[in-house]
Length: 77
Image 1: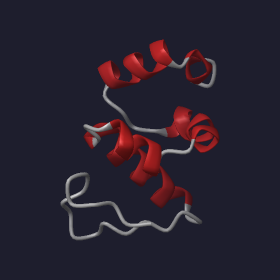
Image 2: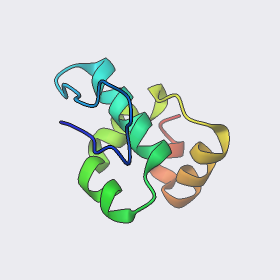
Image 3: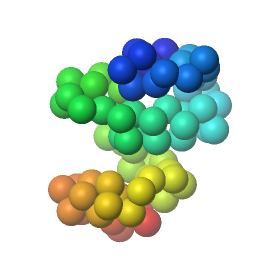
Image 4: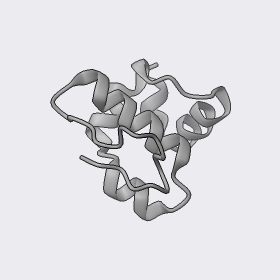
């Protein structure tokens, strides 16, 4: 999967979703950079997010906001 420039301006914008490290990197980038709901709907899968959540490296405020909105994430942390 390739993220658009508005979400990822690094030279490596293509992510192999079969690779755990790439999946985590894509989710971290999308969660940190998305400004539009459509981007989250396009690049974030709810079940995969729940699975990856405890291993994602996210700013505390962002993590707190997501966990407040989606309590099922907090139970995974």
